[in-house]
Length: 308
Image: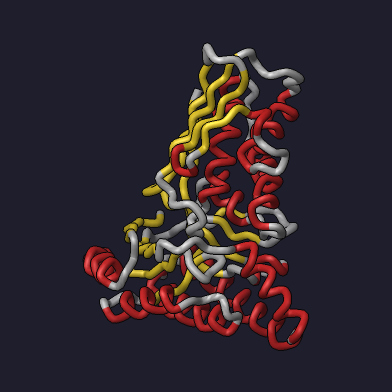
């Protein structure tokens, strides 16, 4: 039995989303995770994931291992007191690990879906989202929950922590280019550093969060009213606030500058920062030029995606 899940990028709201401000994120189907669960002649539950060089039996993995935790959570939810005599879980991913593209959340969602299919226990998106969020806490400490939400529903989402998820209707498709620095994004670390910055300067950082919240709201309205071209300036504004939170990096700045110089309508880092990826809004006929400019500026990969 198989399960799959797309990658994701955050358009607006990273870091502020941890503090109950809105964020806007979209799925990226050009990268994905597929999990297959099959019976195995080997005894035990064997988990294989070439992307992270994992080949291990479930019981040999520590309690806090994210993949093992997701499997155990699924068994618990399905009432499986003892797993089948032999089970093989194969995880294939085209999402770079720790890049800000939602690799961890996509693995959890695809894994939960594959296991639910194998055991014949259908799971609604809400339930998948809830369990995937529990696993995200292991990855990121105090995550906003947006990664698992956009990946679980595979639709653009407007997200405020602790409030019901809202699906965003895309009135007019638009094109983005994602540039991957190839540097792992230390999300747990940057979230912690932003928290320390907030403790030192609560008024200043709360002001930044409020401004980012407004950008997320205007971004949603632009998408739903069929005016995605307005997102470019909003990206530039959002990125400036993220710079003030000290979560950018020289590599991200280089890619953002390259995208803008190649004709992007706007660009910003996407995700935790200090590595990972950036995103640029482009006109469709200029997408390849911007992607090539990003590669020339050092991007390990450039992904062109239509959001619809």
